[in-house]
Image (cartoon, rainbow, N blue to C red; front, side, top):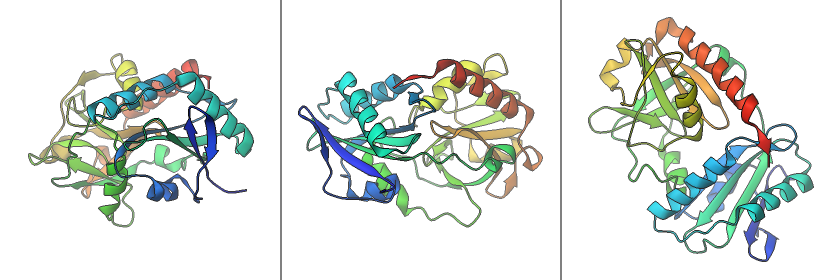
Length: 275
């Protein structure tokens, strides 16, 4: 059984791709540099979380990139259900890619969903900043960035890089949103980064726990960060305990991050829906 399944979806149905890949990451090398995409995972019972929000952002990315996209959402959901059932994978991670040259023909890729190591949630991760790495047209989830981020070589033990603009604002991770607790407030960028689907949930559950400030913290403020974390759809909330070698919150996940993790998990459990 191939560890990754790829198909093309158009008005006539699903068609096998003319290439094979070992994973979604491997499949990306066959996909066009000019296009937009979204990526997420399923839950037990072929359930999904905020799929329409993913598709809304996919359509918004296409509009911003001047790609004429008209999604048939029922057809797309049906095709994903068919691929998942035929794969026998159970829970999957899947990517929907829209090439500029043929936006009427979607590329659907799925792989078995491997849950992330529990220690990244319990003990946190280490990050480094990447100077002058802000993405152009950051509100677009582009396939170009999927290829371009391969240029960053991270040192051993570093989980991800954090993108900085030329003024030193920490905008986002390489495939995540970034947050910091400074002065009792939760700081996260307002503009200049891709609006995350997991970020939508954080912004909904955070206000009872702490005040949200839609402003990007700066690299020079790292020593003042009491806590920090990143989010993405497949990972949820991952505590950050060190940035550029500087410990955050004594080098362990903080109480507000823990509270947000619990609130996030409860929100997810209450909002899963059938694919």
